[in-house]
Image 1: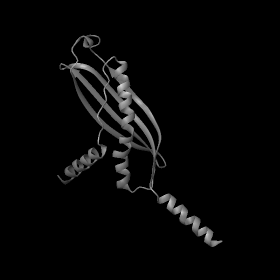
Image 2: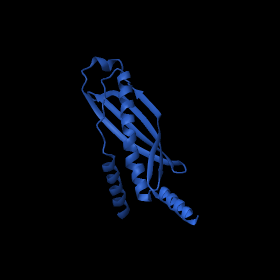
Image 3: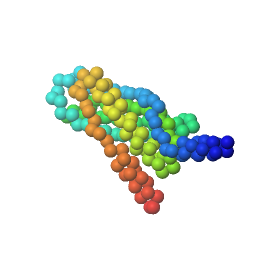
Image 4: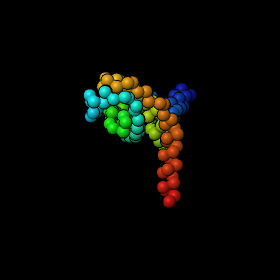
Length: 160
């Protein structure tokens, strides 16, 4: 009888220490589209200049449950004047357990935003097309590289 108890305890310990990361939900938290020069902008030759701003935020909302929000702003100018502006906050709920602090920070700063990006990109494209502009497909983003760059910047600021 004690053998069974030991096996169950070992299995429970292994289960709680095994890293787990799963996406529970993807949601659109906020989206905004502005085309301040419509309809005049449609009468001009379209030579877009695209600007992209990207930020992420994360917070714990429950036991092992984290909300990650990917905030993207796309500014498109035509001949130096505003064409349109899209702002989106693409959110996701992730269950994460069994990671040490460094691994958790990496998951929240790179893996989760990378998982949300295709959803945000699709929503941006859909709203731009509904605004009667040509489709925009944002290029893939290397969130691991951005995360490492951010860590290096923080370390440089700390040493100064």
